[in-house]
Image (cartoon, rainbow, N blue to C red; front, side, top):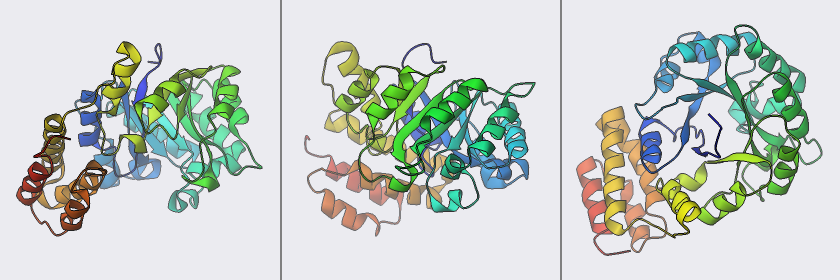
Length: 315
């Protein structure tokens, strides 16, 4: 799966759903990871968790992300995900959001490497489950965990490790330390994927060129810009600074609306669509007025008319 340096859509809670993954794959994302799914929810039959697990037709191969803190629950949930069509399981050990951390999952595992290793050991037990892990560089600047987690992941046969080289307590402030990640990756015995601050094609290409890295993962940089994967590849492979014209942007945004409506229905789909439209409109002429009206529109028809007006002039 990691024979070339892939450009991957990161797992984004509430955002990297089936519609968004399909759009990003259509623009050249090599892989896309599911939204973060509760391992406990899967094991105990939670309806929302089961819905999140269902793959999209574009999920080939399907890479599903789980979070949790109980090794046996995670193993059982991973088996459930494999039975549902997943081919690779990612374990979140880096999410810094409080409601995840307080359960002992996500970035809390950076402070509990013994438990993190127990999870890896459970996944590697026969029959072994193909898995990766996703981490931050540590809990805080005084407690770097990256080298230790890379060593544990390699020892317990993880297929790869993805790191967002910020500490958990930084959240999304400051800057990702790509030099630290590159230094660690060069010593690693498994593929290392980098994530963080990849907000334009040039930053992505710079990251891909860093020694030791086996791929990159884009998260927030893809919001409102699913075509960034093609932008990166055109620049990387052809040296050509491609960007979508106004018409392609309009068609893509309208297609996203159709996918959301088909996925969630009119009412819930509208809520998701508004959120994405706030990102899509960023930086455009008339965007401020568009966003001001956005949450007063109560139908897809209203939103679609407003989108057509916003993109009526060349960008």
